[in-house]
Image 1 (cartoon, one colour):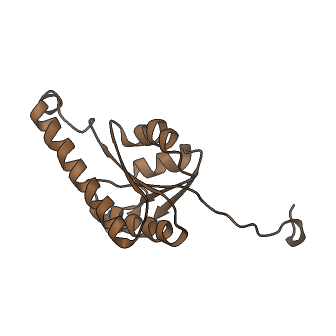
Image 2 (cartoon, rainbow, N blue to C red):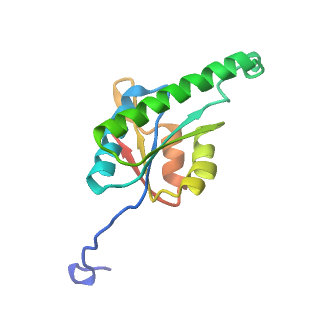
Image 3 (cartoon, one colour):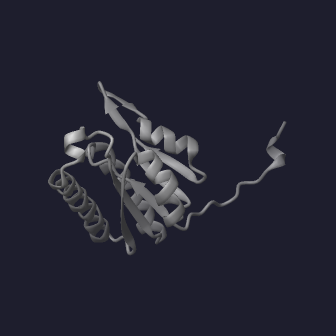
Length: 153
Protein backbone atom coordinates (compact mmCIF):
# COMPACT_ATOMS: atom_id res chain seq x y z
CA UNK A 1 0.00 0.00 0.00
CA UNK A 2 1.28 3.46 -0.88
CA UNK A 3 1.71 6.07 1.80
CA UNK A 4 2.18 9.80 1.52
CA UNK A 5 5.95 9.28 1.46
CA UNK A 6 5.94 6.89 -1.51
CA UNK A 7 5.37 9.42 -4.28
CA UNK A 8 5.82 13.03 -5.32
CA UNK A 9 3.65 15.19 -7.53
CA UNK A 10 4.91 15.23 -11.09
CA UNK A 11 4.08 17.80 -13.72
CA UNK A 12 1.97 16.54 -16.59
CA UNK A 13 2.09 18.24 -19.92
CA UNK A 14 0.54 17.66 -23.30
CA UNK A 15 1.91 18.38 -26.74
CA UNK A 16 -1.14 17.94 -29.00
CA UNK A 17 -4.88 18.12 -28.32
CA UNK A 18 -7.75 16.51 -30.21
CA UNK A 19 -11.31 17.79 -29.82
CA UNK A 20 -14.15 15.64 -31.13
CA UNK A 21 -17.29 17.60 -31.96
CA UNK A 22 -20.71 16.09 -32.55
CA UNK A 23 -22.53 17.72 -35.45
CA UNK A 24 -25.82 16.63 -33.85
CA UNK A 25 -25.13 18.07 -30.38
CA UNK A 26 -23.97 21.68 -30.43
CA UNK A 27 -24.37 22.26 -26.68
CA UNK A 28 -21.99 19.51 -25.53
CA UNK A 29 -19.58 20.24 -28.36
CA UNK A 30 -19.39 23.95 -27.48
CA UNK A 31 -18.51 23.27 -23.84
CA UNK A 32 -15.74 20.88 -24.87
CA UNK A 33 -14.68 23.38 -27.57
CA UNK A 34 -14.32 26.17 -25.02
CA UNK A 35 -12.23 23.95 -22.75
CA UNK A 36 -10.03 22.73 -25.61
CA UNK A 37 -9.45 26.28 -26.89
CA UNK A 38 -8.57 27.48 -23.42
CA UNK A 39 -5.98 24.70 -22.99
CA UNK A 40 -4.58 25.15 -26.51
CA UNK A 41 -4.22 28.93 -26.15
CA UNK A 42 -2.92 28.88 -22.57
CA UNK A 43 -0.26 26.25 -23.24
CA UNK A 44 0.33 27.10 -26.93
CA UNK A 45 -0.65 23.61 -28.12
CA UNK A 46 -1.74 22.44 -31.58
CA UNK A 47 -5.43 21.60 -31.65
CA UNK A 48 -7.07 19.14 -34.00
CA UNK A 49 -10.86 19.35 -34.30
CA UNK A 50 -12.57 16.25 -35.66
CA UNK A 51 -16.10 15.67 -36.84
CA UNK A 52 -17.30 12.36 -38.23
CA UNK A 53 -20.13 11.94 -40.72
CA UNK A 54 -22.12 9.02 -39.37
CA UNK A 55 -22.98 6.83 -42.32
CA UNK A 56 -24.77 4.27 -40.14
CA UNK A 57 -27.69 6.57 -39.38
CA UNK A 58 -28.62 6.95 -43.06
CA UNK A 59 -31.25 4.72 -44.62
CA UNK A 60 -30.32 2.70 -47.69
CA UNK A 61 -31.79 5.27 -50.10
CA UNK A 62 -29.87 8.14 -48.50
CA UNK A 63 -26.61 6.19 -48.51
CA UNK A 64 -26.99 5.52 -52.24
CA UNK A 65 -27.79 9.11 -53.16
CA UNK A 66 -24.69 11.11 -54.13
CA UNK A 67 -26.62 14.38 -53.62
CA UNK A 68 -27.58 13.52 -50.03
CA UNK A 69 -24.04 12.33 -49.22
CA UNK A 70 -22.55 15.50 -50.72
CA UNK A 71 -25.02 17.71 -48.84
CA UNK A 72 -24.21 16.04 -45.50
CA UNK A 73 -20.48 16.25 -46.19
CA UNK A 74 -20.81 19.94 -47.06
CA UNK A 75 -22.72 20.60 -43.82
CA UNK A 76 -20.02 18.88 -41.74
CA UNK A 77 -17.21 20.75 -43.54
CA UNK A 78 -19.00 24.04 -42.96
CA UNK A 79 -19.58 23.36 -39.25
CA UNK A 80 -16.02 22.09 -38.76
CA UNK A 81 -14.57 25.16 -40.46
CA UNK A 82 -16.70 27.36 -38.19
CA UNK A 83 -15.10 25.72 -35.14
CA UNK A 84 -11.63 26.18 -36.67
CA UNK A 85 -12.28 29.87 -37.42
CA UNK A 86 -13.60 30.52 -33.93
CA UNK A 87 -10.61 28.76 -32.34
CA UNK A 88 -8.22 30.93 -34.35
CA UNK A 89 -10.18 34.06 -33.43
CA UNK A 90 -9.90 33.00 -29.77
CA UNK A 91 -6.12 32.92 -30.11
CA UNK A 92 -5.30 29.28 -30.79
CA UNK A 93 -2.29 29.51 -33.10
CA UNK A 94 -2.36 26.06 -34.71
CA UNK A 95 -5.73 24.47 -35.52
CA UNK A 96 -6.27 21.58 -37.90
CA UNK A 97 -9.70 20.43 -39.14
CA UNK A 98 -10.08 16.64 -39.37
CA UNK A 99 -13.02 14.82 -40.89
CA UNK A 100 -13.98 11.18 -41.13
CA UNK A 101 -16.85 9.01 -42.27
CA UNK A 102 -18.29 5.95 -40.56
CA UNK A 103 -18.86 4.99 -36.94
CA UNK A 104 -17.46 7.95 -34.97
CA UNK A 105 -15.82 5.90 -32.22
CA UNK A 106 -14.11 3.56 -34.72
CA UNK A 107 -12.99 6.39 -37.03
CA UNK A 108 -11.57 8.42 -34.13
CA UNK A 109 -9.86 5.44 -32.46
CA UNK A 110 -8.54 3.69 -35.58
CA UNK A 111 -7.86 6.56 -38.00
CA UNK A 112 -7.80 10.02 -36.44
CA UNK A 113 -5.85 9.32 -33.23
CA UNK A 114 -3.13 7.23 -34.96
CA UNK A 115 -2.73 9.82 -37.74
CA UNK A 116 -2.94 13.05 -35.69
CA UNK A 117 -1.14 11.60 -32.63
CA UNK A 118 -2.74 13.63 -29.83
CA UNK A 119 -1.82 12.91 -26.23
CA UNK A 120 -5.13 14.28 -24.94
CA UNK A 121 -8.61 13.84 -26.42
CA UNK A 122 -11.51 16.07 -25.33
CA UNK A 123 -15.20 15.24 -25.79
CA UNK A 124 -18.46 16.66 -24.51
CA UNK A 125 -21.09 14.88 -22.45
CA UNK A 126 -24.68 14.67 -23.65
CA UNK A 127 -27.79 15.98 -21.98
CA UNK A 128 -30.65 13.49 -21.87
CA UNK A 129 -33.86 14.12 -19.98
CA UNK A 130 -32.20 16.97 -18.12
CA UNK A 131 -29.19 14.93 -16.96
CA UNK A 132 -25.64 15.00 -18.28
CA UNK A 133 -24.49 11.59 -19.48
CA UNK A 134 -21.50 10.14 -21.20
CA UNK A 135 -22.69 9.10 -24.63
CA UNK A 136 -21.84 5.90 -26.44
CA UNK A 137 -19.09 7.45 -28.56
CA UNK A 138 -17.44 9.25 -25.63
CA UNK A 139 -17.65 6.13 -23.47
CA UNK A 140 -16.07 3.94 -26.13
CA UNK A 141 -13.26 6.42 -26.76
CA UNK A 142 -12.68 6.82 -23.02
CA UNK A 143 -12.39 3.03 -22.60
CA UNK A 144 -10.37 2.21 -25.71
CA UNK A 145 -8.07 5.18 -26.37
CA UNK A 146 -4.40 4.70 -25.57
CA UNK A 147 -4.13 8.40 -24.66
CA UNK A 148 -5.73 10.50 -21.92
CA UNK A 149 -9.36 11.49 -22.41
CA UNK A 150 -11.31 14.30 -20.76
CA UNK A 151 -15.11 14.40 -20.86
CA UNK A 152 -16.32 17.99 -20.45
CA UNK A 153 -19.68 18.68 -18.79
